[in-house]
Amino acid sequence: MPEAVHTIRIHRPPAAVFAYFADGENDPQWRTGVKEIIRNGPIGPGMTYRQRIAGPGGRAIPSDYKVTAYEPDSHLAFEVTAGPVRPIGDYRFEPVPDGTEVTLKLTADLTGLKKLLMTKPVQHSMDTEVSALDRAKQILEQTTQ
Image 1: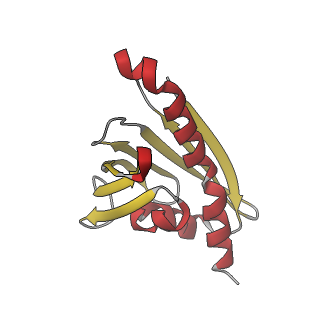
Image 2: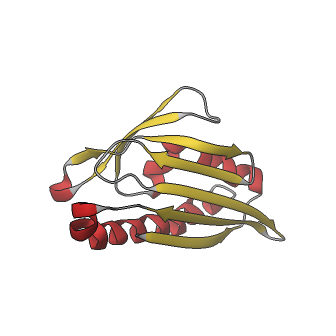
Image 3: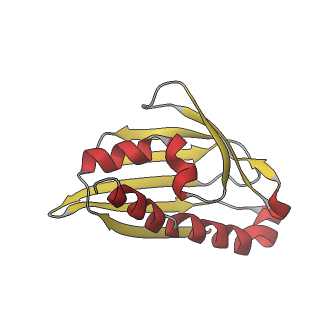
């Protein structure tokens, strides 16, 4: 099962950091593969997003998702509900003396032919996604200057 985890420390308070990640419409700022994302309804538990990400050959593929956990300033989770691969994502936010520690974990349960053919590309994609947290850190820390 492909899995990727990355932790960063952002020099901003937990409320500001959580709010940024909780609004998926911010994702194109730090996730380069997001071609389009639209929130369906207010930010909060159970919200859904219509998302299109860059797929093979640069074509847009569906990757809609639903928020499955929403605990302000501490925990945000989601599950992808459309597309060929449907990973589960889990953000944890921990207050630290100089800001917020953010951990993003992605997992994907591949079976059958998908497991055989897609494990390596999915792992690569998930590694890229979690490492994009570094870009989010830059963006969030620039907004304080």
